[in-house]
Length: 189
Image (cartoon, rainbow, N blue to C red):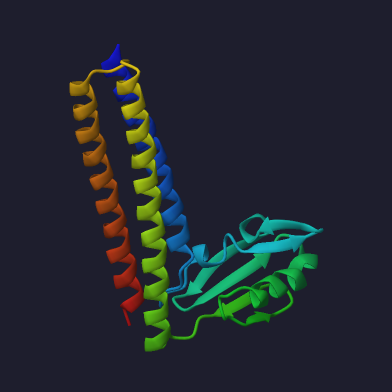
């Protein structure tokens, strides 16, 4: 009975940690690198009939060239609001409108801008590590409570703690790998 309790707790911890990694991946996909990628603008919120809507729901986004994006709105009347959202964002890009499509040209990143992006990436990585550690802390506290209430034995608590730490280490290592890959991508000239 009690071994199942620990297994369930570890499964829950793992699911929550996967969620933290998924959130990190989405965040990192919006960090600009030297190459154009639709993920740079997909989640950009556009005011569509007074409702904040992700750009991906309002247009097709393509990469005609390595340093440019083309946004083709499904509804041509949204062109101006999409341009406004791009200008208001922290992307630092100027939209060019040809009447049918919006073109975004990504200028090469300066060395300083690359360093700033790496700093931003490190901040996001640390936030993800904190999220993983918070999950570990919550589950660890639950395990200790279960042991106090005699729902699990002291040995089972120890085994559970070891397994929880291994799980945490695995996810922190995963975060580090994501960070190294993104940093390499940003610094690539």
